[in-house]
Amino acid sequence: MTGAIKLIFFLIALPFCAGLVFVPHDRSLKRIFHIAYIYGWLLDMAVFFPVSVACIFFIEQNNFIYCVTVYAALQILLAIIGVAVFAGRRMRRGAKVNVRAAMSENANAGDSELSQLKKSAMTAEDSHIEFKPHGSGKVFDAIQGLSSLLKERGRRNFLEAIILWTIFGALLAFQLYKAVTTVFFDGDNIYYVVQSLIATQQGTMYKEMPYIGGSTELDMRHALAVMPVWFAYLAEVSGIHATALCRTVMPLFLLPFVYLIWFAVGGELYGVMSSHDDYSKPAAERAADVGFFMCVMGMLAIFGSVSIYTSERFLMTRTWQGKAMFANIAVPLILLGVLWINREFDKVRKFSVSKLLFYNGWFLFLLVNIFSGMCTSMGVAFTAALICTSCLVSAIRQKKPLFVLYGILVCIPNALYMVAYILLK
Image 1 (cartoon, rainbow, N blue to C red):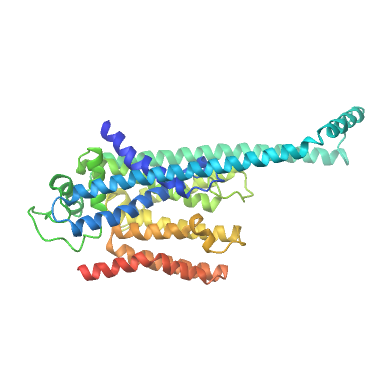
Image 2: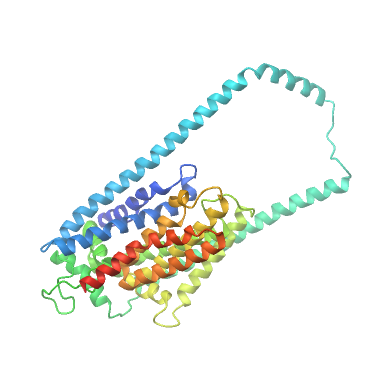
């Protein structure tokens, strides 16, 4: 139980607090809590990458303990900064609201007596007037019928949303159950899981042979893909065995996290629980739309194993591996960033592209690029191509060439990663 509490603290609580930096002060936290966590988790991963790589290459012996100590301190520091920034924004916003309220009260104080006299006169005059709908009775009956129809439709949409989200909950519960109780044989587990185990038991990273044991030279091929080291870090701070953490515990986190990202994507597509308010559909109808979207994604995850190379196959059988996390986390996040960029630009055309930096997908693209390098070496090339292509299409659609420039700038970490990989190999 203590290990589970520690894992929740380092895996959920601290990233969420760090992500509060990216929450706009004028938005309700309950509406975009998932956005705060996604940003915070990616920020923590982006910080872990340089810390772990520096420890691997510049510390010879017992480098893992240095990695754990430095990163844990930075993770806590980021959480404190996030909470402080969020609280400061809310306090300043509250102060501005109070000032406006006081100014409005003072401005209306002089007219209060006159308003009371007018209200008294109007009340006395209207007391003898009986309200009748303007126009014929048929028009009034039609309005009442339309109102009843809208209410009935709202109840129907609400019931539909409950049914769809219940179905999705059942699909997710089934996937979590199978992920915990079913063992899938995969040769890559011998490398990835054992690397995490070696780091926790031997205190070294990528300097032990996972297949036969014994010391060896630094594994340059996998030294930059530090996802096994991150799992080792979680095992170290929580006290859970690395093998049990990777094979049993992490699917319980990664599967809901993947669906949290798809929920954010669905929110942008259908407008529920997003950071935007310019939607004409009722809330119940939007909730039903996103519920149907989530059910489709859940069914695809279950029945998507048409081959051993699909992202759904990796999600269900290799959840803890870098390639699985790249395909099911990094790629959907790029789609989410593209939706944010175009949505914000359509909504606030008076702003320039640079002013939307922290409230759309640009910073998300930067974090995803760093995260993709942690997952797999091929991921940096794939995300760079995907982001640049998306930015080119957005530039043509919005008639803003700056989209291409910003797309190239956020891919600078990818270029540095590829240069380092070539030189080290």
